[in-house]
Amino acid sequence: MSSTHPSPAPASRVLVLNSGSSSVKYQLLDMRDERRLAAGLVERIGEQTSRLKHSPLHSGGESRERTGPIADHEAALKAVAEELAADGLGLDSPELAAIGHRVVHGGKHFTAPTVIDDTVLAEIERLIPVAPLHNPANLTGIRTARALRPDLPQVAVFDTAFHTTMPEAAARYAIDVETADEHRIRRYGFHGTSHAYVSRATAKLLGKDPSEVNVIVLHLGNGASASAVRGGRCVDTSMGLTPLEGLVMGTRSGDMDPAVIFHLMRVGGMSADEIDALLNKKSGLIGLCGDNDMREIRRRIDEGDEQAQLAFDIYIHRLKKYIGAYYAVLGRVDAIAFTAGVGENAAPVREAAVAGLEELGLAIDGELNAVRADEPRLISPEYARVAVAVVPTDEELEIATQTYALVAKKS
Image 1 (tube, helix red, strand yellow):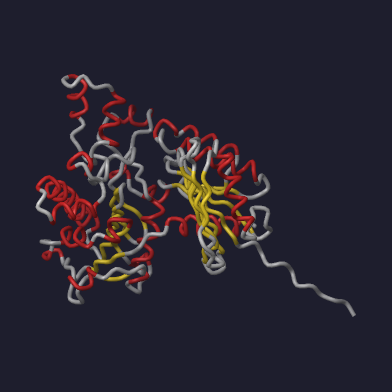
Image 2 (image 1 turned 180 degrees about the vertical axis):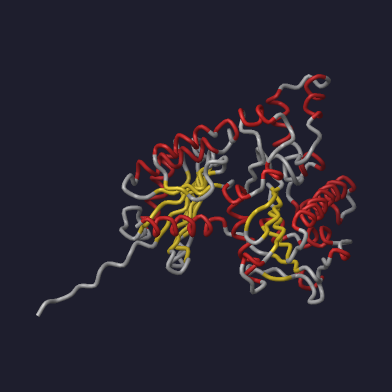
């Protein structure tokens, strides 16, 4: 009589890494039930005051912190591996299926999650000139993780990929075609994992398939972007060659006459680097009123601060312009979804953005808008022709989902 042994369960865990210039955010998820097993952040890498905060979510244990110098990303990932191992979730576990990496810029080439090899690495590196703040850090995280687990599939999930479905009429700038092509100048868009996740979650909230729904997604955080999504595919988005274009943001100007740059060079005597810093780090809300935290701005408004009120009004004015523009692009809108830190938590922003748009079928129920919750929810009255929703984004889950689907398909 022969005995049979059950085959081992397939690996189902995905580690998601988001590597910044001096930080690493991470989450470990079990994709059988999309359960988070652990999460954490390493910040101030390369400084004497580095800090790692780790939360063992699977066991309900208390968060742990370690402080002290962490020299580089390799040391940071090794420290992360030690924390995971202390919870029985080590990187050497046979249950780890893959590591998914957030990569900000994938250009036109990468339209979907991609298993990383040397050719993929070289292409991400080639895109550094159009993403000098982000792609180098993403590459460092990838190379470090590959060195730690060279046998494990590593997958790049690109912020730009969701937006590659835009038609050329939306993606092209009206400049000389040869110059644009030579220097890869076009609208790429960013926050793509968030826009993909939120547009699908909004369709689910409406009880429909994503292919049946037209959604305007408003990702409002310190960085902010809007997208027009028709039947699950992006047809326009507010960020462009870089994350500077579009909405008013925490520290970025958003849309602006490009001749302002020439004026600042010729009349203001500013260098390209100084203007870059001005528009990316000293503009937006912080440039208008000295604060980029919407909670603080609202507090100041309540106390009668006119500068804070003007900053808020400019922020809302730009937001309304994009809602109207994307309504025109889509022709029919089934829902508007607010997401990210401001979109999910700032009821006055949502109320002001929709106010006066009743002729477009938009309205907000004040009581529903005031409710705070972690789940997707509708905040529009039943009679509204267009649903208004608050949908918490989950970029880590989106990256893990895309990563796991890809490696499962290839195995």
